[in-house]
Figure 1 (tube, rainbow, N blue to C red):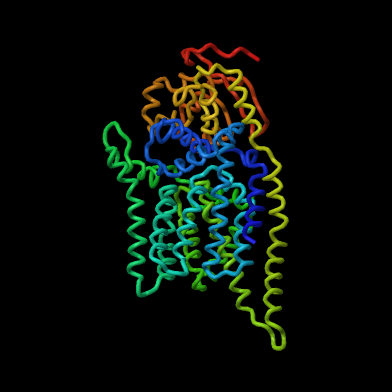
Figure 2: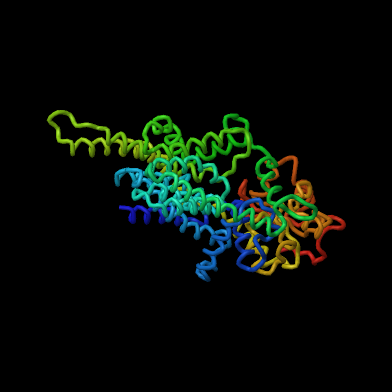
Length: 507
Protein backbone atom coordinates (compact mmCIF):
# COMPACT_ATOMS: atom_id res chain seq x y z
CA UNK A 1 0.00 0.00 0.00
CA UNK A 2 2.87 2.39 0.73
CA UNK A 3 4.43 2.45 -2.75
CA UNK A 4 1.23 3.31 -4.68
CA UNK A 5 0.34 5.94 -2.09
CA UNK A 6 3.77 7.59 -2.26
CA UNK A 7 3.58 7.48 -6.07
CA UNK A 8 0.25 9.32 -6.01
CA UNK A 9 1.56 11.94 -3.57
CA UNK A 10 4.69 12.46 -5.67
CA UNK A 11 2.66 12.82 -8.88
CA UNK A 12 0.41 15.44 -7.28
CA UNK A 13 3.37 17.44 -6.00
CA UNK A 14 5.25 17.16 -9.31
CA UNK A 15 2.33 18.42 -11.42
CA UNK A 16 2.83 22.15 -11.82
CA UNK A 17 5.70 22.24 -9.34
CA UNK A 18 7.50 25.06 -11.20
CA UNK A 19 4.35 27.13 -11.66
CA UNK A 20 2.65 27.33 -8.26
CA UNK A 21 3.00 28.82 -5.72
CA UNK A 22 4.96 31.92 -6.64
CA UNK A 23 8.69 31.78 -5.95
CA UNK A 24 9.70 33.22 -2.59
CA UNK A 25 12.83 35.12 -1.61
CA UNK A 26 13.79 32.34 0.83
CA UNK A 27 13.73 29.81 -1.99
CA UNK A 28 15.95 32.03 -4.10
CA UNK A 29 18.35 32.50 -1.20
CA UNK A 30 18.86 28.79 -0.53
CA UNK A 31 19.18 28.04 -4.24
CA UNK A 32 21.73 30.85 -4.62
CA UNK A 33 23.67 29.56 -1.63
CA UNK A 34 23.71 26.06 -3.11
CA UNK A 35 24.89 27.61 -6.40
CA UNK A 36 27.76 29.29 -4.53
CA UNK A 37 28.79 25.96 -3.00
CA UNK A 38 28.70 24.17 -6.35
CA UNK A 39 30.75 26.91 -8.04
CA UNK A 40 33.41 27.16 -5.36
CA UNK A 41 32.25 30.56 -4.13
CA UNK A 42 32.12 29.51 -0.47
CA UNK A 43 29.18 28.68 1.78
CA UNK A 44 27.01 31.50 0.42
CA UNK A 45 26.85 33.96 -2.44
CA UNK A 46 27.55 36.75 0.08
CA UNK A 47 29.37 36.83 3.41
CA UNK A 48 28.26 33.87 5.53
CA UNK A 49 27.13 35.43 8.80
CA UNK A 50 25.73 32.37 10.64
CA UNK A 51 22.08 33.19 10.08
CA UNK A 52 21.37 29.45 9.68
CA UNK A 53 23.56 26.36 9.87
CA UNK A 54 24.76 25.58 6.33
CA UNK A 55 23.93 21.88 6.19
CA UNK A 56 20.57 22.46 4.50
CA UNK A 57 21.88 24.12 1.36
CA UNK A 58 24.89 21.81 1.36
CA UNK A 59 22.40 18.95 0.95
CA UNK A 60 20.64 20.93 -1.78
CA UNK A 61 23.95 21.49 -3.55
CA UNK A 62 24.68 17.76 -3.33
CA UNK A 63 21.30 16.88 -4.86
CA UNK A 64 21.78 19.45 -7.62
CA UNK A 65 25.22 18.08 -8.38
CA UNK A 66 23.86 14.54 -8.61
CA UNK A 67 21.08 15.66 -10.96
CA UNK A 68 23.65 16.93 -13.45
CA UNK A 69 22.37 18.43 -16.73
CA UNK A 70 18.89 16.88 -16.36
CA UNK A 71 17.49 20.08 -14.82
CA UNK A 72 19.47 22.60 -16.87
CA UNK A 73 16.44 23.70 -18.90
CA UNK A 74 14.64 24.88 -15.75
CA UNK A 75 15.21 28.07 -13.82
CA UNK A 76 17.36 27.69 -10.72
CA UNK A 77 14.45 27.82 -8.26
CA UNK A 78 12.29 25.53 -10.41
CA UNK A 79 15.14 22.99 -10.49
CA UNK A 80 15.41 23.29 -6.72
CA UNK A 81 11.73 22.53 -6.40
CA UNK A 82 12.08 19.37 -8.47
CA UNK A 83 14.83 18.28 -6.08
CA UNK A 84 12.40 18.77 -3.18
CA UNK A 85 10.60 15.63 -4.38
CA UNK A 86 13.48 13.65 -2.82
CA UNK A 87 12.82 14.78 0.79
CA UNK A 88 9.08 14.50 0.08
CA UNK A 89 9.36 10.79 -0.77
CA UNK A 90 11.67 10.22 2.19
CA UNK A 91 9.32 12.05 4.57
CA UNK A 92 6.25 10.08 3.44
CA UNK A 93 8.11 6.78 3.82
CA UNK A 94 9.46 7.66 7.26
CA UNK A 95 6.07 8.94 8.43
CA UNK A 96 4.62 5.55 7.48
CA UNK A 97 7.37 3.73 9.39
CA UNK A 98 6.87 5.92 12.46
CA UNK A 99 3.14 5.27 12.38
CA UNK A 100 3.69 1.53 12.15
CA UNK A 101 6.24 1.57 14.98
CA UNK A 102 3.71 3.41 17.12
CA UNK A 103 1.37 0.48 16.58
CA UNK A 104 -0.98 2.01 14.01
CA UNK A 105 -2.63 -0.46 11.65
CA UNK A 106 -1.82 -0.32 7.93
CA UNK A 107 -4.98 1.67 6.97
CA UNK A 108 -4.25 4.24 9.69
CA UNK A 109 -0.61 4.59 8.61
CA UNK A 110 -1.83 5.10 5.04
CA UNK A 111 -4.29 7.71 6.29
CA UNK A 112 -1.45 9.60 7.99
CA UNK A 113 0.59 9.66 4.78
CA UNK A 114 -2.45 10.68 2.70
CA UNK A 115 -3.39 13.51 5.05
CA UNK A 116 0.18 14.75 5.11
CA UNK A 117 1.02 14.35 1.44
CA UNK A 118 -2.23 15.38 -0.22
CA UNK A 119 -3.22 18.40 1.84
CA UNK A 120 -3.12 21.49 -0.42
CA UNK A 121 -1.14 23.18 2.36
CA UNK A 122 1.49 20.44 2.12
CA UNK A 123 1.64 20.85 -1.64
CA UNK A 124 2.11 24.61 -1.22
CA UNK A 125 4.98 24.33 1.25
CA UNK A 126 6.67 20.99 0.57
CA UNK A 127 7.22 22.11 -3.01
CA UNK A 128 9.15 25.09 -1.69
CA UNK A 129 12.94 25.06 -1.42
CA UNK A 130 12.93 25.49 2.36
CA UNK A 131 15.35 24.31 5.00
CA UNK A 132 12.37 22.94 6.94
CA UNK A 133 11.54 20.61 4.04
CA UNK A 134 15.12 19.36 3.91
CA UNK A 135 15.20 18.88 7.70
CA UNK A 136 11.90 17.01 7.89
CA UNK A 137 13.09 13.51 6.81
CA UNK A 138 16.00 13.72 9.27
CA UNK A 139 13.62 14.62 12.08
CA UNK A 140 11.25 11.81 11.15
CA UNK A 141 14.17 9.41 10.85
CA UNK A 142 15.20 10.31 14.40
CA UNK A 143 11.75 9.43 15.73
CA UNK A 144 11.60 6.22 13.67
CA UNK A 145 14.92 5.02 15.09
CA UNK A 146 13.94 6.10 18.62
CA UNK A 147 10.78 3.98 18.31
CA UNK A 148 12.79 0.86 17.46
CA UNK A 149 10.91 -2.28 18.50
CA UNK A 150 14.16 -4.24 18.96
CA UNK A 151 15.61 -1.66 21.38
CA UNK A 152 19.11 -1.90 20.00
CA UNK A 153 21.70 0.56 21.21
CA UNK A 154 22.77 1.54 17.69
CA UNK A 155 19.21 2.67 16.91
CA UNK A 156 19.29 5.24 19.70
CA UNK A 157 22.73 6.41 18.60
CA UNK A 158 21.42 6.68 15.04
CA UNK A 159 18.43 8.64 16.31
CA UNK A 160 20.78 11.15 17.94
CA UNK A 161 22.79 11.45 14.72
CA UNK A 162 19.67 12.01 12.59
CA UNK A 163 18.34 14.61 14.99
CA UNK A 164 21.68 16.39 15.01
CA UNK A 165 21.58 16.60 11.22
CA UNK A 166 17.97 17.86 11.40
CA UNK A 167 18.99 20.66 13.78
CA UNK A 168 22.00 21.62 11.65
CA UNK A 169 19.65 21.71 8.66
CA UNK A 170 17.06 23.92 10.37
CA UNK A 171 17.70 25.00 13.94
CA UNK A 172 14.00 25.20 14.90
CA UNK A 173 13.92 21.39 14.91
CA UNK A 174 15.61 21.65 18.31
CA UNK A 175 12.15 22.45 19.71
CA UNK A 176 11.23 18.79 19.22
CA UNK A 177 13.99 17.46 21.48
CA UNK A 178 11.71 16.94 24.55
CA UNK A 179 9.31 14.86 22.46
CA UNK A 180 12.16 12.81 21.00
CA UNK A 181 13.56 12.18 24.48
CA UNK A 182 10.11 10.98 25.54
CA UNK A 183 10.07 8.60 22.57
CA UNK A 184 13.47 7.23 23.58
CA UNK A 185 12.40 6.92 27.22
CA UNK A 186 9.16 5.09 26.39
CA UNK A 187 10.76 2.65 23.96
CA UNK A 188 14.00 1.57 25.60
CA UNK A 189 14.23 -1.24 28.12
CA UNK A 190 14.41 -0.09 31.74
CA UNK A 191 17.45 -2.26 32.34
CA UNK A 192 19.45 -0.54 29.58
CA UNK A 193 17.81 2.89 29.65
CA UNK A 194 20.92 4.65 30.94
CA UNK A 195 23.03 3.23 28.11
CA UNK A 196 20.40 4.08 25.47
CA UNK A 197 19.94 7.67 26.63
CA UNK A 198 23.71 8.10 26.89
CA UNK A 199 24.24 6.79 23.35
CA UNK A 200 21.52 9.10 22.04
CA UNK A 201 22.81 12.17 23.86
CA UNK A 202 26.48 11.56 23.10
CA UNK A 203 26.00 11.22 19.36
CA UNK A 204 23.58 14.15 19.23
CA UNK A 205 26.06 16.34 21.10
CA UNK A 206 28.95 15.27 18.89
CA UNK A 207 27.03 16.16 15.71
CA UNK A 208 25.63 19.40 17.12
CA UNK A 209 28.98 20.64 18.41
CA UNK A 210 30.45 20.47 14.91
CA UNK A 211 28.81 23.81 14.13
CA UNK A 212 30.29 25.90 16.98
CA UNK A 213 33.60 24.06 16.46
CA UNK A 214 33.61 25.21 12.83
CA UNK A 215 32.98 28.80 13.96
CA UNK A 216 35.68 28.58 16.63
CA UNK A 217 38.27 27.26 14.18
CA UNK A 218 37.54 30.21 11.90
CA UNK A 219 37.81 32.65 14.80
CA UNK A 220 34.12 33.52 14.39
CA UNK A 221 32.54 32.01 17.47
CA UNK A 222 32.39 35.26 19.48
CA UNK A 223 31.71 38.81 18.24
CA UNK A 224 34.75 40.88 17.34
CA UNK A 225 35.89 43.73 15.18
CA UNK A 226 35.70 43.28 11.42
CA UNK A 227 34.26 39.76 11.40
CA UNK A 228 30.93 37.96 11.69
CA UNK A 229 30.25 35.55 14.55
CA UNK A 230 28.07 32.62 15.45
CA UNK A 231 26.96 34.27 18.69
CA UNK A 232 25.90 37.44 16.87
CA UNK A 233 23.90 35.35 14.40
CA UNK A 234 22.14 33.50 17.23
CA UNK A 235 21.36 36.78 19.03
CA UNK A 236 19.90 38.21 15.82
CA UNK A 237 17.69 35.17 15.26
CA UNK A 238 16.44 35.18 18.86
CA UNK A 239 15.95 38.89 19.43
CA UNK A 240 17.06 40.94 16.44
CA UNK A 241 14.37 39.98 13.94
CA UNK A 242 11.30 42.14 13.67
CA UNK A 243 8.53 40.49 15.68
CA UNK A 244 5.43 39.44 13.77
CA UNK A 245 3.28 39.28 16.90
CA UNK A 246 1.14 36.47 18.24
CA UNK A 247 -1.39 34.67 16.06
CA UNK A 248 -3.85 35.34 18.89
CA UNK A 249 -3.68 39.04 18.00
CA UNK A 250 -5.95 39.49 14.95
CA UNK A 251 -4.04 42.57 13.82
CA UNK A 252 -0.60 40.89 13.82
CA UNK A 253 1.40 39.65 10.85
CA UNK A 254 1.49 36.20 12.47
CA UNK A 255 -2.31 36.08 12.51
CA UNK A 256 -2.34 37.00 8.82
CA UNK A 257 0.17 34.21 8.13
CA UNK A 258 -1.91 31.62 9.98
CA UNK A 259 -5.01 32.86 8.13
CA UNK A 260 -3.18 32.32 4.84
CA UNK A 261 -2.39 28.74 5.91
CA UNK A 262 -6.03 28.09 6.80
CA UNK A 263 -7.21 29.65 3.56
CA UNK A 264 -5.33 26.94 1.66
CA UNK A 265 -6.45 24.09 3.96
CA UNK A 266 -8.72 24.81 6.96
CA UNK A 267 -8.89 21.16 7.98
CA UNK A 268 -5.59 19.42 8.67
CA UNK A 269 -4.17 21.91 11.17
CA UNK A 270 -7.51 22.27 12.94
CA UNK A 271 -8.09 18.51 13.24
CA UNK A 272 -4.55 17.90 14.47
CA UNK A 273 -4.50 20.67 17.05
CA UNK A 274 -7.99 19.88 18.37
CA UNK A 275 -6.96 16.24 18.77
CA UNK A 276 -4.10 17.09 21.15
CA UNK A 277 -5.98 16.90 24.51
CA UNK A 278 -7.42 13.47 23.71
CA UNK A 279 -4.24 12.13 22.07
CA UNK A 280 -2.20 12.94 25.18
CA UNK A 281 -4.24 10.29 27.01
CA UNK A 282 -2.99 7.60 24.61
CA UNK A 283 0.48 6.47 25.73
CA UNK A 284 1.81 5.42 22.33
CA UNK A 285 0.78 8.80 20.83
CA UNK A 286 2.32 10.99 23.55
CA UNK A 287 5.69 11.65 21.86
CA UNK A 288 4.14 12.87 18.59
CA UNK A 289 1.43 14.75 20.47
CA UNK A 290 3.98 16.45 22.71
CA UNK A 291 5.96 17.46 19.63
CA UNK A 292 2.84 19.02 18.12
CA UNK A 293 1.92 20.74 21.38
CA UNK A 294 5.39 22.29 21.74
CA UNK A 295 5.30 23.68 18.20
CA UNK A 296 1.82 25.11 18.71
CA UNK A 297 2.71 26.76 22.03
CA UNK A 298 5.93 28.26 20.63
CA UNK A 299 4.08 29.41 17.51
CA UNK A 300 1.51 31.28 19.62
CA UNK A 301 4.10 33.37 21.45
CA UNK A 302 4.43 37.06 20.50
CA UNK A 303 7.64 36.83 18.49
CA UNK A 304 8.76 36.03 14.97
CA UNK A 305 6.79 33.32 13.13
CA UNK A 306 8.56 32.05 9.97
CA UNK A 307 6.45 31.28 6.93
CA UNK A 308 7.60 27.61 6.54
CA UNK A 309 7.09 26.91 10.28
CA UNK A 310 3.99 25.00 9.22
CA UNK A 311 6.01 22.24 7.50
CA UNK A 312 6.70 20.23 10.68
CA UNK A 313 3.18 20.91 11.96
CA UNK A 314 1.66 19.22 8.92
CA UNK A 315 3.21 15.78 9.41
CA UNK A 316 2.57 15.85 13.19
CA UNK A 317 -1.07 16.86 12.73
CA UNK A 318 -1.54 14.06 10.19
CA UNK A 319 -0.02 11.44 12.48
CA UNK A 320 -1.94 12.58 15.57
CA UNK A 321 -5.26 12.57 13.67
CA UNK A 322 -4.61 9.15 12.12
CA UNK A 323 -3.37 7.72 15.43
CA UNK A 324 -6.46 8.90 17.27
CA UNK A 325 -8.72 7.46 14.57
CA UNK A 326 -6.86 4.13 14.82
CA UNK A 327 -7.26 4.16 18.60
CA UNK A 328 -10.97 4.86 18.31
CA UNK A 329 -11.49 2.05 15.81
CA UNK A 330 -9.45 -0.31 17.97
CA UNK A 331 -11.60 0.49 20.98
CA UNK A 332 -14.80 -0.56 19.21
CA UNK A 333 -16.32 -3.74 20.56
CA UNK A 334 -18.84 -5.82 18.68
CA UNK A 335 -22.40 -6.06 19.91
CA UNK A 336 -23.57 -9.43 21.26
CA UNK A 337 -24.16 -11.84 18.43
CA UNK A 338 -22.28 -9.75 15.85
CA UNK A 339 -18.98 -10.91 14.36
CA UNK A 340 -16.21 -8.64 15.60
CA UNK A 341 -14.39 -8.81 12.29
CA UNK A 342 -17.27 -6.90 10.62
CA UNK A 343 -17.74 -4.11 13.17
CA UNK A 344 -14.34 -2.48 13.04
CA UNK A 345 -14.15 -2.27 9.22
CA UNK A 346 -17.58 -0.66 9.16
CA UNK A 347 -16.55 1.89 11.80
CA UNK A 348 -13.31 2.56 9.97
CA UNK A 349 -15.18 3.14 6.71
CA UNK A 350 -17.54 5.53 8.47
CA UNK A 351 -14.62 7.48 9.96
CA UNK A 352 -12.72 7.68 6.66
CA UNK A 353 -15.90 8.43 4.71
CA UNK A 354 -16.89 11.24 7.04
CA UNK A 355 -13.40 12.71 6.93
CA UNK A 356 -13.31 12.43 3.16
CA UNK A 357 -16.69 14.14 2.79
CA UNK A 358 -15.49 17.04 4.93
CA UNK A 359 -12.15 17.40 3.15
CA UNK A 360 -13.18 16.78 -0.44
CA UNK A 361 -14.55 20.20 -1.49
CA UNK A 362 -11.71 22.29 -0.06
CA UNK A 363 -8.96 19.86 -1.00
CA UNK A 364 -10.27 19.41 -4.56
CA UNK A 365 -10.28 23.17 -5.05
CA UNK A 366 -6.84 23.60 -3.50
CA UNK A 367 -5.25 20.79 -5.51
CA UNK A 368 -6.84 22.12 -8.71
CA UNK A 369 -5.17 25.47 -8.06
CA UNK A 370 -1.85 23.81 -7.25
CA UNK A 371 -1.80 21.80 -10.47
CA UNK A 372 -3.22 24.31 -12.96
CA UNK A 373 -2.37 27.89 -11.91
CA UNK A 374 0.85 29.50 -13.13
CA UNK A 375 2.02 32.12 -10.63
CA UNK A 376 5.55 32.39 -12.05
CA UNK A 377 5.02 33.26 -15.71
CA UNK A 378 5.75 36.96 -15.16
CA UNK A 379 8.98 36.11 -13.37
CA UNK A 380 10.13 33.84 -16.19
CA UNK A 381 9.41 36.56 -18.74
CA UNK A 382 11.29 39.14 -16.68
CA UNK A 383 14.32 36.87 -16.38
CA UNK A 384 14.34 36.24 -20.14
CA UNK A 385 14.07 39.97 -20.82
CA UNK A 386 17.01 40.79 -18.55
CA UNK A 387 19.09 37.98 -20.08
CA UNK A 388 18.37 39.03 -23.66
CA UNK A 389 18.04 42.81 -23.53
CA UNK A 390 20.15 44.13 -20.65
CA UNK A 391 23.93 44.48 -20.81
CA UNK A 392 25.31 41.91 -18.31
CA UNK A 393 27.78 44.55 -17.10
CA UNK A 394 24.85 46.53 -15.69
CA UNK A 395 24.08 46.47 -11.97
CA UNK A 396 20.62 45.13 -11.08
CA UNK A 397 18.78 45.09 -7.75
CA UNK A 398 16.61 41.97 -7.44
CA UNK A 399 14.99 39.55 -5.05
CA UNK A 400 17.07 36.43 -4.61
CA UNK A 401 14.92 34.20 -6.82
CA UNK A 402 16.54 35.89 -9.86
CA UNK A 403 20.14 35.72 -8.63
CA UNK A 404 21.40 32.35 -9.86
CA UNK A 405 19.69 32.60 -13.25
CA UNK A 406 21.15 36.04 -14.01
CA UNK A 407 24.63 35.10 -12.86
CA UNK A 408 24.49 32.02 -15.08
CA UNK A 409 23.88 34.20 -18.16
CA UNK A 410 26.82 36.49 -17.43
CA UNK A 411 25.85 39.10 -14.84
CA UNK A 412 28.49 39.75 -12.19
CA UNK A 413 28.00 37.75 -8.96
CA UNK A 414 27.48 39.55 -5.67
CA UNK A 415 27.89 43.15 -6.85
CA UNK A 416 26.35 43.01 -10.33
CA UNK A 417 23.18 41.16 -9.41
CA UNK A 418 22.51 42.30 -5.86
CA UNK A 419 19.97 40.79 -3.48
CA UNK A 420 17.97 43.79 -2.28
CA UNK A 421 18.21 42.83 1.43
CA UNK A 422 21.98 43.32 1.20
CA UNK A 423 21.38 47.00 0.49
CA UNK A 424 19.86 47.44 3.96
CA UNK A 425 22.75 49.47 5.32
CA UNK A 426 20.95 50.16 8.60
CA UNK A 427 20.96 46.46 9.51
CA UNK A 428 24.62 46.12 8.51
CA UNK A 429 24.30 42.37 7.90
CA UNK A 430 26.96 42.39 5.18
CA UNK A 431 29.48 45.25 5.39
CA UNK A 432 31.16 44.06 2.17
CA UNK A 433 28.22 45.37 0.11
CA UNK A 434 28.38 48.81 1.72
CA UNK A 435 32.15 48.92 1.19
CA UNK A 436 31.95 47.87 -2.47
CA UNK A 437 28.85 49.97 -3.26
CA UNK A 438 29.26 53.09 -1.12
CA UNK A 439 26.72 55.04 -3.17
CA UNK A 440 23.91 52.71 -2.15
CA UNK A 441 20.97 52.84 -4.53
CA UNK A 442 22.79 55.28 -6.82
CA UNK A 443 25.19 52.50 -7.85
CA UNK A 444 22.44 50.64 -9.74
CA UNK A 445 21.13 50.77 -13.28
CA UNK A 446 17.97 48.71 -12.81
CA UNK A 447 15.65 47.43 -10.11
CA UNK A 448 13.24 44.52 -10.52
CA UNK A 449 10.01 45.32 -8.68
CA UNK A 450 8.64 41.86 -7.96
CA UNK A 451 5.86 40.74 -5.58
CA UNK A 452 8.56 39.61 -3.13
CA UNK A 453 10.32 42.97 -3.11
CA UNK A 454 7.10 44.97 -2.76
CA UNK A 455 5.88 42.69 0.03
CA UNK A 456 9.14 43.16 1.96
CA UNK A 457 8.83 46.94 1.71
CA UNK A 458 5.26 46.76 2.94
CA UNK A 459 6.02 44.43 5.86
CA UNK A 460 9.15 46.33 6.96
CA UNK A 461 8.18 50.02 6.83
CA UNK A 462 11.11 51.10 9.02
CA UNK A 463 13.91 49.50 7.03
CA UNK A 464 15.19 48.95 3.48
CA UNK A 465 15.38 52.70 2.93
CA UNK A 466 17.94 52.39 0.11
CA UNK A 467 15.64 50.02 -1.76
CA UNK A 468 12.75 52.48 -1.40
CA UNK A 469 14.90 55.26 -2.83
CA UNK A 470 15.92 53.09 -5.77
CA UNK A 471 12.29 52.26 -6.49
CA UNK A 472 11.07 55.85 -6.18
CA UNK A 473 13.92 57.04 -8.47
CA UNK A 474 13.10 54.59 -11.26
CA UNK A 475 10.82 54.51 -14.27
CA UNK A 476 9.15 51.43 -15.80
CA UNK A 477 10.98 49.89 -18.72
CA UNK A 478 8.96 46.71 -19.14
CA UNK A 479 6.06 45.23 -17.15
CA UNK A 480 5.09 41.56 -17.16
CA UNK A 481 1.80 40.35 -15.72
CA UNK A 482 -0.86 42.39 -13.98
CA UNK A 483 -2.06 43.18 -10.47
CA UNK A 484 -0.17 42.09 -7.40
CA UNK A 485 1.68 39.39 -9.34
CA UNK A 486 3.23 41.76 -11.86
CA UNK A 487 6.99 42.09 -12.31
CA UNK A 488 8.38 45.46 -13.39
CA UNK A 489 11.81 46.00 -14.92
CA UNK A 490 12.59 49.59 -13.91
CA UNK A 491 15.47 51.83 -14.98
CA UNK A 492 16.98 53.94 -12.22
CA UNK A 493 17.35 57.54 -13.33
CA UNK A 494 18.88 60.70 -11.93
CA UNK A 495 22.18 62.52 -11.87
CA UNK A 496 25.04 60.47 -10.49
CA UNK A 497 23.24 57.13 -10.76
CA UNK A 498 24.21 53.89 -12.47
CA UNK A 499 27.30 51.77 -12.93
CA UNK A 500 28.53 53.56 -16.05
CA UNK A 501 27.23 50.94 -18.45
CA UNK A 502 25.31 52.48 -21.38
CA UNK A 503 21.56 52.40 -20.80
CA UNK A 504 19.39 49.92 -22.59
CA UNK A 505 17.82 51.29 -25.75
CA UNK A 506 14.03 51.55 -25.64
CA UNK A 507 12.35 48.45 -27.06
